[in-house]
Image (cartoon, rainbow over all chains, first blue to last red; front, side):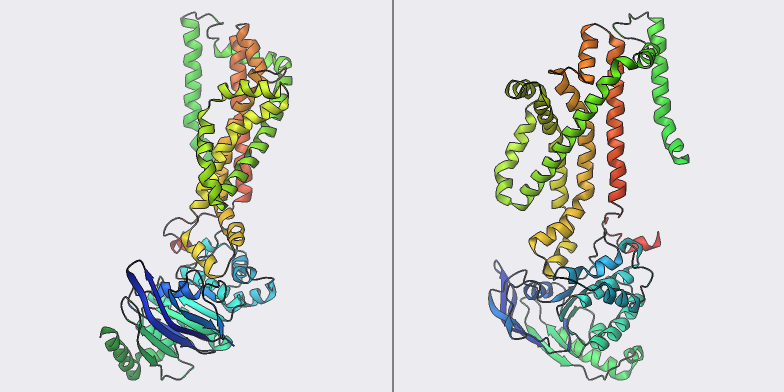
Length: 243
Length: 261
């Protein structure tokens, strides 16, 4: 069970309001994307959920427990892979778990193999391509004991081909583990393709502008990206973002 | 080996040329040997005088090693304390800077007055010369911790101690080693200076005796010994660094490209 409720959050820096009356929920096993223009306060929202900074008012609940300012309640995948360059892949993958307590190397090795990185366990991050590094970063988040995952524009630095591969891979892994995921992106297509629900944020100060439930059934395949319905839906989302 | 020759021939030929000019100049201008002995004289003294100075070397090496170990440990501990406790940083950073503005040649006699002629004042002198480069280098290393990595660690719920042990310390290791390399060469110099001020053995003593009896060739032998010892210490640290720091630090922007190299 992991289920996130954000209630009426406000956050400002000095005179700049960044988040205003922002409320959202992520249900157990749900994949929710947040779409918003750059600088709309998505990172600030993640900092609040991660407990690095405190909201001016409003509350964040994870499984009915208030987690305002409580670090380590979620597992996290950042925009850059953020792998420790002096640790090999195996040691990097277990870092998230290691921070919380004892961990299981056997499961880690299985996950590495499932991610198609077998043979790279003892390589160092600089020997891997960008896409491979992001996979390592995702496994690290998946192996952390916290069941709720926050993904912060994880594929934004990748090229188009790698990105699609990664999206498909992420969907595969996710449909197996069914973690609750809060995913931040500014790519509409990616958001529709991956999510159960999309939340659109306004410009600063950010508040929830609109919410879409994605009607496409799972499992989804890349062919979906070119169907009439998909493009139509993308247009609807696009129009809402413009207003 | 090939690379060593490729890179090394330039400095080696400069040194050889320098020695030839020196030798020829000494002969041609008939410079008295007490003023400037020719390299051949220094060479002869280095070979024949081994029995004279060998006992001094071990004493200096011992002093330098002990001083370096004490100095670098203190340097690292001071850096960690100053970094982790902001109050300490505010209070002691200026004191540290001031401590480096007092020349050793001034503070050393004081230390002799307080602690006598034994090992202790000498180790203190070497420590004073050694700890500063390490403290500064380590502090810089801690402060330059990669922001992305730090952000990840915080989001993942790492405690302050975990962040230090798992991120900041390993991240600063290359910087710490730059400090250690500087201090390793300083430690030999520190040992020699401390021996000048009062000891019965050591390269510093050998040097003082040589210069007061106008054995300039021996002074040069002492200089060469100091150079060799410093280089040996330096290479030892480089060797340890290579063993310990096997990863490449992240350079801006090449995190994704590096796969292609």
